[in-house]
Length: 252
Image (tube, rainbow, N blue to C red; front, side, top):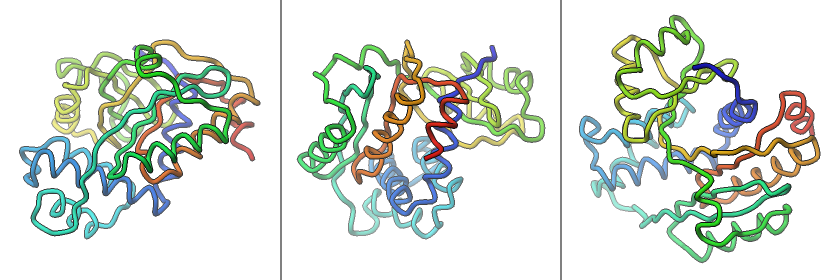
C-alpha cells in the first residue's frame, strides 16, 4: 500500500509555501464562498464547506475572512460574486498533460489569462476531451507524519471508510479514495484521533511523464504562471521527476 511520488511531495510543499501569498488567501476564500453558496452556511450539513474552511485555517487565513466568506456565499451578507467553474485542457512542455481548473465571474478574462500563461511558457490549449481521459477524479486526504500517524494506523482507521491506497510523501501520507468517500475517510481519521492537513477531491493522472531538469524547470515556470492568474484555482499535471531533478529545477 505504500509508495513514493516525488512530484506529489513537491506539489504539497509548494502549496504550503504558496499559501502565504495574499493571492492564495483570496483563492481559498473564494472556495469557501462557493461552498457556502452551494450547500448553505451550516457546517454540520455541508461537508464541502467544512473541508474548504479546514484548508483555509491550515494555511492561516484569518477567521474574520472565513466568516465573511461564509456569510457572503450563503446570502447573509452583501457582496457575493457569481462564480462558475471552468476546466481547461492543455499540454505543457514535453507533452505533459494538464487540467487547469478556474473559478471565475468573468469567462473571457479567465480564458485570456490561461491562454497568455500557456503561450508564454511553452504550453498550448488542447481540444476538449483530449486530455481529460488521462485523469481520474479521486478523493485525496493529506496527513502529516505526527504522533500516531503511521501507515498501519492510517490503514486500520480508514480502510472501512473507503481508503484505496496510502502513499508515503516523505513528511506526509496521502490517502486516496473515491471522491464520494472523502468525508467518510476524514471522519474516520478524526474518530481515531488523527489530524489531517487537507481533504478534497482532485484529478489524478493514470500515466505520468518523467522529466529531466530542463523539462521540470519549464513545467514549474508554467505552473507558477498559471497559479498567478486570479481565476485559476488548481493545476493538475501528469508530470513526475526524481528528488534530485526537482531540487535542481526549483533552485532558481
